[in-house]
Image (cartoon, rainbow over all chains, first blue to last red; front, side, top):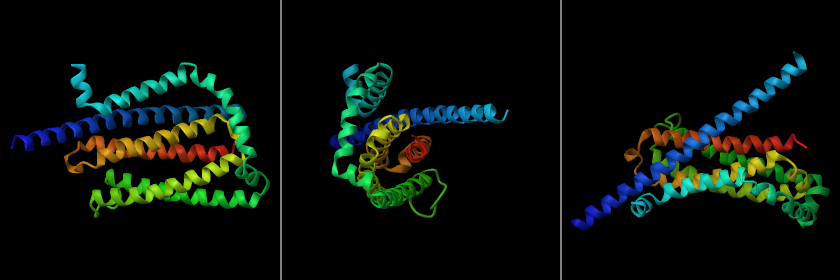
Length: 53
Length: 194
């Protein structure tokens, strides 16, 4: 009984760890992608403005 | 307290350490120090069999590139199907676990095809891509994508998906699509650069 409870607790802890890690990395990727593509679009917009006014 | 945190959240701590290390590598001047040393490796790559075939026999390069694109289509299809299902956009009548497991298997085939053909293609144009910042960016995105898929996404989805926080699952789906989109976009960008 105690072993079963311990194993359940360990499973829940591992799930929490995996979720926290996933949340941190996913946030980093989403923020980085948003900044990167925004900068790329801005640079193309500026180039087009230089070329065509 | 630190020891208990380390034993309770090992993956989270490794992730935070990896992100900090990446920032140190990029902004700490280490990449600038290593970059010149890699030129000789790229010059050597062009002298290998792969490099010589890729450079002198256009048909071989075109054939391998076609296989590379098919591998990319396979990989991209799996990402869209698997992550689309996580977001609840596609295949909603099929259980999430089934879609995730089956797309993962095909994803691995796609990734192996892309890596094998990509190495061949890189050998043919090694000294060109060495000077392209977009190539290095693609390698960074590819490494991040592979690590994310096998070290973050797969362990997370091996749990009962219904027991996971739906926001985290959806964010993982979005992040996965974004990182593989970045790999594909920067890959095509190489073709239009230099």
